[in-house]
Length: 102
Image (cartoon, rainbow, N blue to C red; front, side):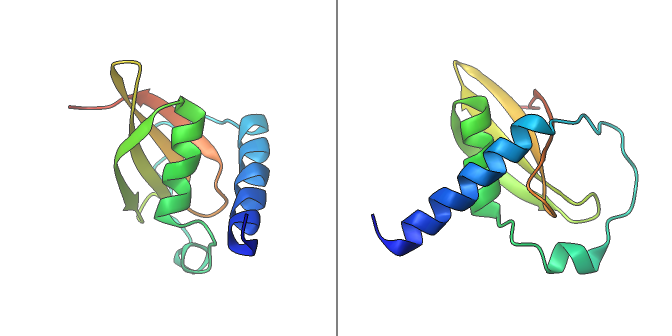
């Protein structure tokens, strides 16, 4: 494995451990996001998609940043169902999961 892959694996592993212990539903949270924290976040769309895929044990089919809410919305196809996993764009926590709108 290359150094880049080792670093990504370490970051992903750390995020998954942190996320599994801090799964917190923030449905309906209308707070404004600190744009500075969002701009300086190490959490990328690709990393959020990877975390969501691992959490839902499926394949990400659509992902987008919701900057006004401070999270990535990742639609994951798993076991014949489509679910949306919300990942914090600031710290990588899994905020919620629910059936995705088709």
